[in-house]
Image 1 (cartoon, rainbow, N blue to C red):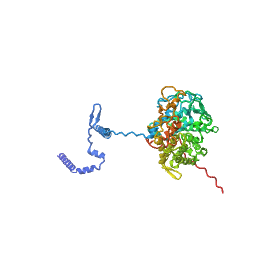
Image 2 (image 1 turned 45 degrees about the vertical axis):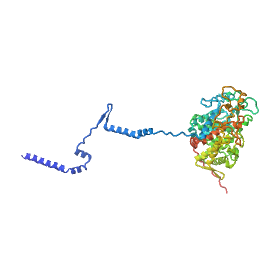
Image 3 (image 1 turned 60 degrees about the vertical axis):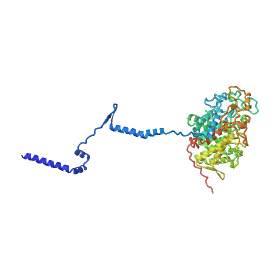
Image 4 (image 1 turned 90 degrees about the vertical axis):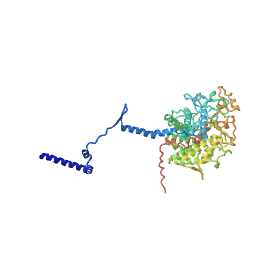
Length: 612
């Protein structure tokens, strides 16, 4: 019985504890808050695990959660990427209109074609001049050059290859490409211009032993005419180059610092154009260095034209060579970064002998014979952008000052040169073929403005007069506009540009029909004498131009009016690319300096000790 009573009492106590637990649940919860997770798990017991649901696609089983994530991602991607594309494609198309080329870029396309028309040698299939073919394939057979001297360019309306001006127009063409590569690219003429340069430099490399470091001769001309001669030659015959069958002798120069200096400039400038072709660029630099060493040889300092008073001097006579020293040294410095070339270009003896600081008006006129204004502008570029300081600063400052004065001389209000009533500056001093000098000056003026703009300078001083660079640009545009037809004759002096241009150009190839008939040395003169227009337009050729009264006679026998030259067209091309705004503005400031090392100013020498 006692045991039975114990059991009942125990049940009652247990019941009472359970009731207390239900009534004081809040206290129990509060107690749980002070337990750690492990202790709570002991009190609450194991949590019930939810079952993961899957979707069976047959080939793959995937959870509901992953499926929702994938579908959400797809919807989000569609909203962010797909929907905008669908909307954009559904909108009406509004293509931006193509950029209308300005007059200068239109003329530039044509001016470059003149180089194609003047090519000698075996022509590429894509030369683009249907009335031209292979010619001069036997040139240089009287030399020791393996394969002869086929190639290069005919100089003008005759079929002579003058290597002195040929080198000049290769330098000018390279200079324009170096300064304005983006413009050439944007009008799709960059590769064309490079091909034209390479056609010339490949040929120039044949005219001397380019594999040697020291040479004793340069082949300086192929073909020609001796004054007074009646023998069949390039002047006594009127034949297109494809039919030449008369002797074309090669002239050799054992001296010629002018010729060698200009050839060195041409190869050095071209080496910058072809820096993307390391093998060819290196070959050009090596050739340029060899030529310049020849030019600087003390025993060979006689003008290249002096030994040939009847063959060269009447046509491309050189009046000095110190300008070529400055010009060639400047280009070799840019091509190689070798400071010795800069030291030579800024040696006071060079401008002294070249009369660079005499302010002789004729020496401010750039041409195939006078490189001073071009060379000083090229070196002014170095001062404006790199400012190398001592020991070059004094001479570079002088070059900069004289360059500014040269630009002043081109402005009408300073009355240095005469001007026609129609607005053409007479840089030839009333002489023939003024336009080639005008085109060169327009290029230098436009380039100088671009140098000033790139250095943040709005103008310069002509004496006490501050001149805005806009005024100089206006000079350049006015002269090119005159050449392109804004003149009293309403005549474009670039063949094929505009509606009115010369039709009787003094040019053997352009005036002789491409009718597959042979015309002999004398038989071809009937095409010279005819009053009919040329059967072949020599597109892009800039003729000699009008006289000092703005008058122009479109007659084939007036070669000073109607004959084009390669030297003239090189200046024309350079001026046009500098002025066109179809493809943007400004120069390539840095490419020319690629090989130039940092030019930290040297410490000037200490002054002499003071003596009481």
